[in-house]
Image 1 (cartoon, rainbow, N blue to C red):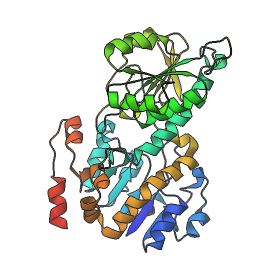
Image 2: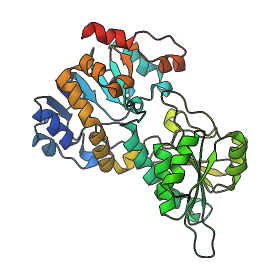
Image 3: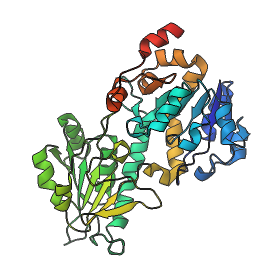
Length: 376
């Protein structure tokens, strides 16, 4: 099977779909991997690193797409890349199709693309194996950015996250007790902040309580608790995830207005539309804006800030799935690997996901299970 790894072209997106280790594994199994020139440069991987393990360097994105049966990306394809799709190929990426532009849906349909969304790949035990490491990275980065944005020169409240003897610690309110929320909680606790985690699932809150031996306060994420706790937060972290759906708005504008001036909202649900009414997407080179006196940090691809670590983490999570796909073929792999099958949002250009169809206000266009059975 032939794989293509194009260079990511979104602003400051330096991650790469496959590291040299991933290319080595596929090449050793007899498959061909075409890597666009300098695709890995932003993450510290040179072209000769790829060539040394059997990868083939190509010099245009058109060639990386055009030679590939399977394209391995990181970020959602841009409009510039839509015209490069090859008819009938498979593309893996963080698609977030529920909030994608209509032109992407049109391009995927016209070129009969099978789109596998990393963020929706789910194991039988409910884990999200590809999204999880990216969520962990974002959680670990949260206090690094929060500490800077709370300083006086940045327009913050002028406070230290961990406080000092005789000086109160900052209050961090985390909405969501999933992978990102737990990772952020661990990082903020490690720096000495006072952390509260809210979730609607008591089982997840119990997991958090056990993880931190009661050092983190847990609360049910109902309207009463949200309205009561939001005004006290120095940092509010949105880590809400409903796979395949737009993130629900948990914090409305009136609640933001009650927060103290210079406090900080970090809405990590922004790639699914955001869980704060006042949020809008920002970028790594312009990461913040102020609304209602509160600093908002809403970078959808924060793991790209540590591109090398994130690329390694993505590759580690993805490698076994790609090997199965390469060795077995698309339909065989979809039939045998539940996580791959759950990530399919479009199959040969047709909507194969009930959640995606509902989000777009459309009908499902193909029964994936039946389609797989017919081709195997």
